[in-house]
Amino acid sequence: MEALTWTGALTWLNPILGLSAAIMVAAYTAQIVVSVMPRAGLRSAGGDVASVDRGPGGVFAKTGSYAFWASIVLILIYVLAGIFVGPTAGIVGAISRQLLPVWLALVVTFAVSVVFKRKLGLYGKLFDSTVGMIGFALVMFWVFTGIFGGVFDLLVTHDSLSQVSGMKNKLPGTPLAR
Image (cartoon, rainbow, N blue to C red; front, side, top):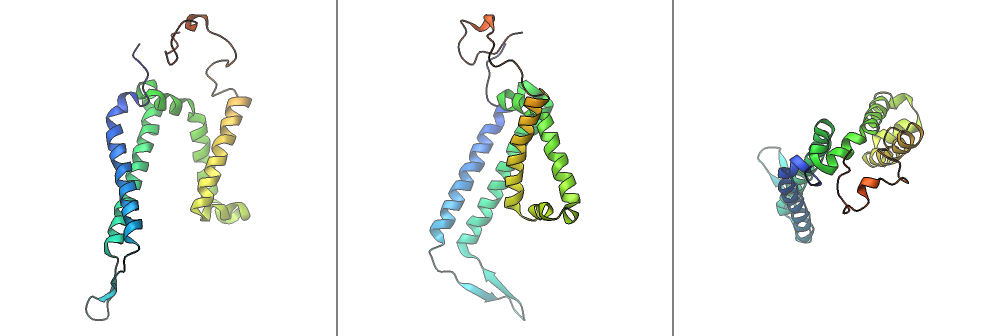
């Protein structure tokens, strides 16, 4: 049995994610530093057309935005590949597959809520705000995890209080051989 890693067969994505995160941090830091410098403002593009000169701050903001979305896409690749590949995608992949009922419940809840948000009153207003949707997703993730893990016993892989005799003298992090 091979040693456990966080990303398993997807390890080749780690440097790309690290580079994307580093570019994002550097771009947003540079944007903050450049924001104290004066900008040119409006400029005429000819005729009745005017455009805003964003300056270097705008370039850094756009670069940071692209790096942010690249990081989000890479994280989604880790999760989705883990669902399909399973434990060969490392610890992240195994956890992604184990939490499949939670992901499905979140997708169904969000899909139904977005489709019917105008008919849902105050609850529907939650889906007009990005911050509201993120907060709702975090809360519902843990609610669904509690329901599927505690009530339906779909997520728990073993009895957390029992001992496995075959693991008595093994090092921490050693995979459980069944």
